[in-house]
Each structure stands twice: as structure tokens, then as C-alpha cells.
Image (cartoon, rainbow, N blue to C red; front, side, top):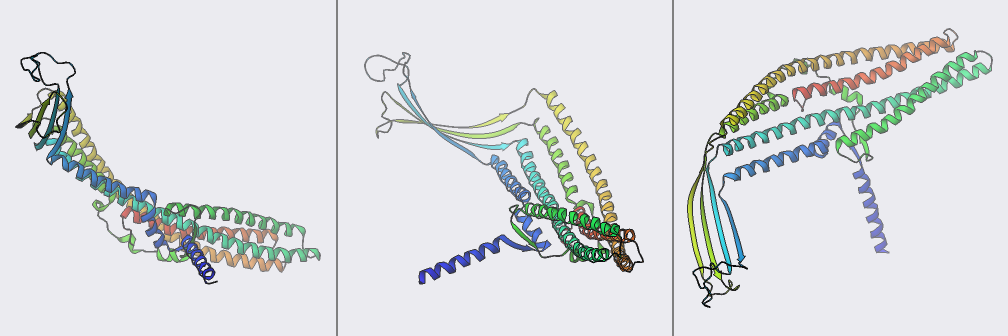
Length: 440
């Protein structure tokens, strides 16, 4: 009995824990933090940095002493005759039948222009990888904000449409009774039926889009597409939090932009390519030490203690000088210089484009705030107009056409207001992405 109780409590604990792990609730900031760690694109960008670090170390080690060792065994099946009688049978032969050579070689690079450029290039490549990671994080953040907002928009739209269906259904029932008593025309009932049918259709579509919105948010966060997901923030709360007029007046140094850094590092890489081509005109200097042990025998007895080994050693310096490829190398250097000039023009273009993007993003954000205020006022007016027309209609003062027109205006204002709230959130995210300000 005791074991059964323990098993039952264990199963209950597992079920609760599993449910909690698969049904998580996220604020927007929590969703962003989760995505920066688990989003697949962000994870790959982090791996690119690790790869760049390894590549930098790989390049650096080229300048370290390089040591290699080897053992060669040779069996001379057919030998030429020579002046040495190895086995004492009176038949002079050239070379022993079996030979083993154990060798070790150490080399040290003393000077190589391309190696020095390679070290600088590896450092720039690492910086480019870090820039790419920063750019990826900004884009992931913006994508999460958009996806999170789309879910909230779908949820809010669904709630509003459900309330509209409830109100319309009640009105239709009341109007049908009035019609059945001969106090209203059939056309009025049909008008409400058409409106109700349209709202129900919109509700079904919004619910389907809501499912897709949740799936998109899960994917963007790096979760399973069908994982259960709950959002802690509301559309209205996020809208209020994202109205920051001070952001419109902030000054920004273009050189701090990740896009500018990427373009600047591209220019640096082109400068290094020019240096690399120029380095091909320079000599390469290295030193080496060789050590060998040679063993000769007519039979394979090299593991015997009495085997004679002949040591040899050598020290030397190697100098390689490029002699003839002047014209081709000169052309390659000129081509690298042309690419450098292009990268300088690209950097200037990026700087001007960033200024335009910032100005445009600020304008869009300011308009989104103004449009939100305007749509909020319009919604209040549309609600009052619809309520008045509904009262007039049931009092027999307004026609069904007037009521339908007021209802259509109200439903349109509702959706426009929701979209205006989402625009405030998204436009601020776009501005922050351009400004690289991810903590506002």
C-alpha cells in the first residue's frame, strides 16, 4: 500500500511538472530573453562567434614552432650490386636489404608578410562575427515583438468579435419577436442576419489566424511549434508602455550603429586584402632543425638491443624570394585597391542611409502615436453613434439601414483601434532596431 501511494504521488508530481514546463506564461520581455537564448538563428550566430575564435587561434598557431615526426621502413626486394658486402657471403651489394629511418623535424616561421596580415584578418573576422550576432539579436527582438503583438491583436479581435456576436444575437432575437408581432419589416431582420453572419465569419477567420500567430511566436522564440503558450501582457498595457515621446528627441551617433560597424569592418577587411597582395612581393624566412636515426639490416632485427643506429642532424634557414610574377601580382594589388575604394563608398552610403532610416523610423513612430490617439477618439464616437442608432431603431425612429451603417462603422473603428495599438508597439521596435537601443 505504501509503495502504491509513493507511485501515485510520483505520477502526480511528474504530471504537474510536465504540465508547467509545457504551459509557460511569458511577458514580452521574458519572450525576448527566451528567444535570444533559444532562437535558432541567434544560436547559430553565437556558434559563428565561437567558430571565429577558433579560426583566430588556428591562424595564430601558424607562427608557433611546428614539429613533425615519422618512421619509414624500406625493404629492398631487388638491389643493385655495389662495393659493400653486408652479409659476408662474398657478394658485394649496394645498400642494405632493409632500412628504417626515424626522423623529427622542427620548423619556425621567422617572417611572412601574409601571416602578419592573416593575424589581423582573423581579428577583423571575429569582430564581423560579433557584429552579425548583435544584428541578429536586434532582428530577433523585433521579430518577437511583432509576433507577440500579432497574438495579442488576434486575442483582442476575437474577444471584441465575440462580444459583437453576443450583442447582435440578442438584438436579432428581440427584433425577430417584434417582427413576428407584425411591428417590424422582414428586411430589418434580414439586415441584422447579414451583419451577424459577417461578424461570425470574421470571428472564425480571426480564430484561425490566432492559432497561426501562436505558432509563429513559438517558432520565433525557438520553441516547438505546438507548445502551449500563454501571454502575460495585454495589448493595451504594451501600447501605453511603448509610448515614449522622449525617444523622438534622442540624438544618436551613427558610428555606434551595428550596420555602420559592419560596413566599417568590411572596409578594414578590404584594407587587409591590399596588404595581403602587397605582402606577396616580400620574401618568406623560416628556420628548421632535422634529426634522423638510420638503421640498416639484412633481416628485420631493428628491435634487437644490438641494432646499430646512425644519427644525423641538420640545421638550416630557408629563404623564399618571389622572382617572376610581378605583373600579375601588381594587377592583383590594384584590383584589391579598387575594392577598397568601393568599400569606402559603401561606408559613406551606409552612413547616409542610416540617417534617412532613423528620420523615417522616428516619423513613422510619431505618426503611430498620433494615429493611436485619433483612433481611440474615433472608437468612442463610433460606440456612441452605434448606441444612439440602436436605441432609435428599436424606438422606430431610425431605419435598419442606419443601424447597419452605424454598426459597420463601429466594427471598423474597433479593428482600426486595435491595429493602431499594434502599430505603436511595432513602430517603436523598428525605431529601436535602427537606433540599436534594445533596453528602452
